[in-house]
Length: 399
Image: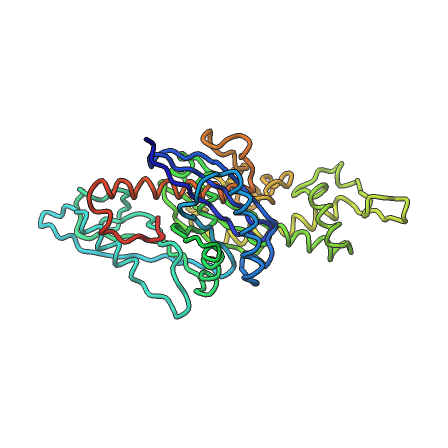
């Protein structure tokens, strides 16, 4: 008899609440069995500003998924983003205890514990504490156990946020009588499924461009090296078009969806469209070049901010390519613009063969990544239980 549990991935976005329900069978196989979505209310730039409205939106999305599940929900994997999320790099150190200098698991754990013991200011809590790798006497090592050294350093990228914002996100799930079993930064979730294992080893930057914010995650040696949030997204392009071209917000969004391009050619630069789409009502023309200028300026701002945060990695050749995902990545020629800014090859997310073709949409990357994370953590938990130490290990929202 198959052992299964149903997990729901909830991605709280500025534009939509996205829910995927997956069935994990025998702790190794994931089947997507339901999905639901609803327009986000009470969320601005990834931050919850009205808990009641946000909870109502999430409930609508989850109920939509539940209609197709036909089974109880066992756990929730919650994606979290927002402008309150910050990160920093830290090192934890330990001297090698063995006389011959052989690194043991205990040495590794002492270095990890030292890194994760860094305290935060009041009102802040860690979301994910991510091990980037190890250094033995200053030399990088991805698998230090069994090697020889005098000292081991564990490098971590520490993602943290405001207690109030984190608690509000958790409260949304709890208001439905459910508990969050796994909490993961949405940018990391997206990168899990939007980039290949080979890209993660070589060095890849994944950018998820949402409505109110954009999340990024940089992988190297198969590990997350840095991740963060930038308060720029597709809604900013809509607002810029509305203000700059004197359009209603609704019309600006329509024009962005149908006519905006990150880069245009000479022929397109000479063309124009009708602002309202109906020349019979005294409509006015808007140059395609003006739409492109507004779109390009905002996207360049986003890419330049992310580049500035990762300059040392880019200049040092650690990042080999850029992958774009999220709804705004649908804009035509956005990869061409990103390639100019980062001076690196750029492509849109393709997803792997494990993702059904009907689900290979950039808007789904975060929710799909959350399910993938839940499966990974379930496999790890099963392995720990089989080793007889599962109940002794503290469950952390870590990677």
